[in-house]
Image (cartoon, rainbow, N blue to C red; front, side, top):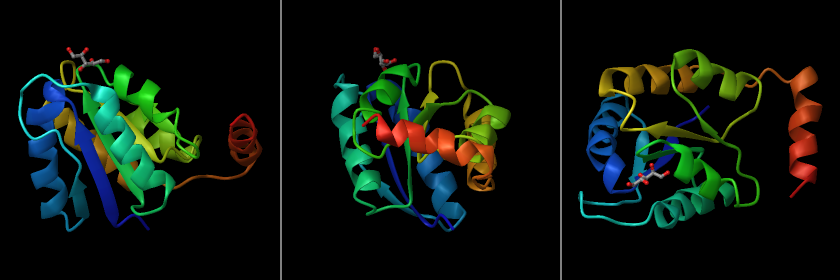
Length: 146
Ligand code: RB5
């Protein structure tokens, strides 16, 4: 069961991160805020690396990354061993990222997804389980590529 989460963003995701941080804490998740801490311009790979390392080392159960599109942070996080970071855009893709891909990080594009929908994404992801079955060997094939 997911209890401890790392969350990170660049400047484009800072405001959404602040809102999601409050939302997650209100739902009793233990959340580690990995920055950034303002809207001052910064580089998304730096924050993707911090969150991805924490997930990879199992210091947290899952991660949330936010940038303008969700694309940059997902590309960067997926460079870290053991990471399956999924750029999701609605509750359906968030649920499937867990059910089929066992995604351990979800990425959200703050310039395209309003806070209301980002919360729906979070609810869908954290209430979903990996379905194993035919999906397991596919995820294992991804691990073998590392
Ligand atoms: C920052 O302007 C923007 O490029 C970044 O947030 C992200 O969308 C990159 O993928």
